[in-house]
Image (cartoon, rainbow, N blue to C red; front, side, top):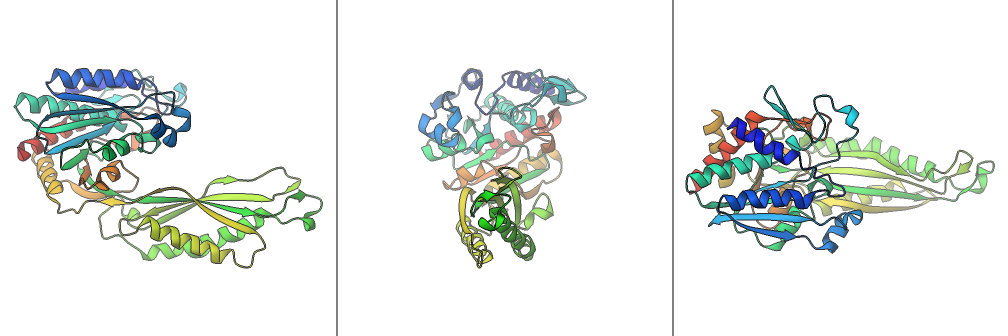
Length: 397
């Protein structure tokens, strides 16, 4: 099966589905459609409406987005994965091979998208091949675009379409074969804008320095708000225990500098607040906005706080029947039960969960090579993932 995995994954990597802007999507969907139809599955190709694409990526509207939905029988589980990949970066940074010229070395297949996440798509494809040979007809599959730009025009659109018939879903993102992600953290991104009065640097007394106001607010966030988060801890197990505590990153993006001889009349900085499953977006928005309001009290500056991105945390209970069924399937293949953890980052699982479809994430790794030069996936993990999916389908027949 390893040779088949290398063959399939290599074909996928050679189609450079780079996002943004969304290159070669149609070529990839044509490949996948031919593959699943060849296995006797019913296949539907869904084009994402341009207004949905424009909202997610205004610069991407001239690149059509397609979702593949394949089904056989009465589905008990839905397998999902995204086919877009991040830009490869400078080719000179790649040492083992060129980004879209897959190379198999010592059990690893190298190339952009190998682990994020065409390795997972390959695991789905292999599982489907084996399931069809056994006569199993209890599953559906979707390949979606645009996870790398937030997912709203990919998995998000599919989930809202109501076209998914299966009651449960498994996403093939790279959790690693000894770990099931039962959920993920949420986020709220804020833009804190401070307005003063811009004047010439030689006469600062005539102005009001927006940067100084921003610094005073930032210091209070660093000295008071961030330390207060350490008292909160999620009840769930995390892949890294440090992720069980909410976090806030300040200053990931700053705006407003003019020139050295100008007193800035505007300065802004971002806050990246990460939520544990026990927190909600609305609660966090109110909490941060209230803290900044108090931190800005006494300043002459006008201060505005805008929410520029938000996403709820999502989790499926570790004792849910889907989790138990997949746990048993993985243990049968791997010889030991997997961990059941919450992912520190975000996943497309949230789109399905908010539509009432319990969803977990399980796929081949290692995750740490994603988005990096010389990205690779362990082919043994692709194969074991496929075998675990097959065991799940056998259990659900």
